[in-house]
Image (cartoon, rainbow, N blue to C red; front, side, top):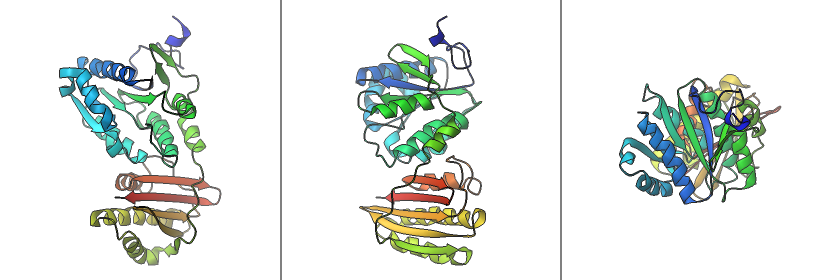
Length: 310
């Protein structure tokens, strides 16, 4: 058997492992459709629950390619459900896998042409964390990558975050695969500096109520339910600073077009870029409430920046 047909542990590539995380490199619509449709149809034939979470533009063509099989597949628009990369594991993938006791199969496309540079580090951290979040679970996740439209460094990162890469008819173990924690640390990068003259407020346990009012007033142009979500998210972050850092922190507020931006900084060591932690599942809630969550931890402390817009 050729070396390319075994994984990094020496196991045959066609062996049924508890969990598999694979990248699919495609170069046009036909190779995208053929690769994903074959994956989905195999799952349906095996009696596995199947989820397809891809950008909406790809859903109709994939349904057409699948034909009657599509009626047995659950489809989600990833540009909406996965707008915040930190929302994908708890809000999309875990939610689907938890709904079944059987081996599952999912197509998840968290990175597509049009993702911004601001979002990209969170996307890579998401892909890396899938390997730890689903370790030992029974299922497989296939992540399509547009190898024509995406930059080369994105494909390199896909090789680092996926133990297996499918490119055309070749399905190989990735020699670039990197320990998820190490890769998440690589993308623990400093955030872009806030614009000049932003609002800045010190907070402590005695000023949390006032801080919530500041956030509510700051985001006045958003819908009422969005304002409530933002206040809840920032309150969770500030409470974490008070409980697990120095007991105090700094809140910064500014606006980027129609998006409200809130930043909480403290002197603490932060928390892993994961879907657990931060007072239990607080970080899950923050990610579910916001359009984007970015975190940077250094020797001087931790900064968490959240975005919520119309």
